[in-house]
Length: 231
Length: 152
Image (cartoon, rainbow over the protein chains, first blue to last red):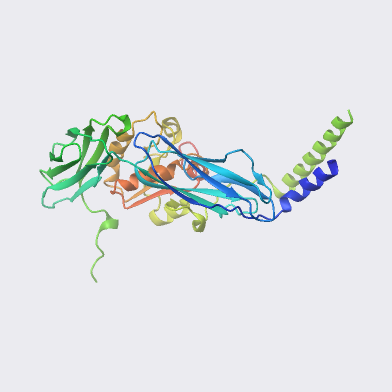
């Protein structure tokens, strides 16, 4: 018995990495608006003729945790298991794609054998089409519009919009109550740079979706944004 | 008793081997290496930040407020994903800096913490900064380069 263990221990690091077979490496889900965590399972099997050791996972984001459901890391030929991933979506909205890298014994530090992908659509409740309106310094002070649409079955009303900068006039237009709105922003003076913050308050019952924010900026073009010089 | 003796012999052999290794090879290499070829999307090496923009970038510290106050890069701003912080306030305050910043580099804790990629993604969605990257190696790389307060 002892001899067997010693032989196994001395030879284990020399075993070549073999593959795990995943029926699905990409999973897509529509998350409910009030969810904070989403769990996705990735079943796998060792269909090779060698044992496979799962060395580590790298989710590349503190918002995703991953682990083998049973905690088992060595899989003999024919054995199967499930990698369970959990995505903390409290800081996200919209379409989010997160990879989970699974490194097997024998992989280099940079190249994992398996990349699992979590695709999650997180309802924004109030979807804001443009996050930042922009004017260049000296440009005509023409009005610009931000379209806001309510996603999902429940109606959500925008109850107030407050602006931080009196140089930006704003007007909220109700296109369809509880469904569709427009925020029209007009700068009074574009001769100086400035930033306006608009805080949008809704009557959404889910606390983290109650307030939204959007911006208006007047600025000089950054050097990297300037058009190339003509020869 | 026999078992204790065997364990002692094994420990002795291991320690001797470790000491010889340390003497000949030296201490373990803890340097954070950055290979541009193996970076994740939107990650960047410190060498690239220094060569492309000579370090003239806006640094965003994605660590905890306590860590940022302790040794954050001079001139850096704080934006993390701590649930105890106000995300909308971070966004509004950061925007004041972003409108004049062509390049933003986000760093988080030691090694591969991933929060910097998360914060960089939020900044990109504001659609106001042309170049947003997460620093490979995070604060560990900056500390090794003497760029964190008190590390040089």
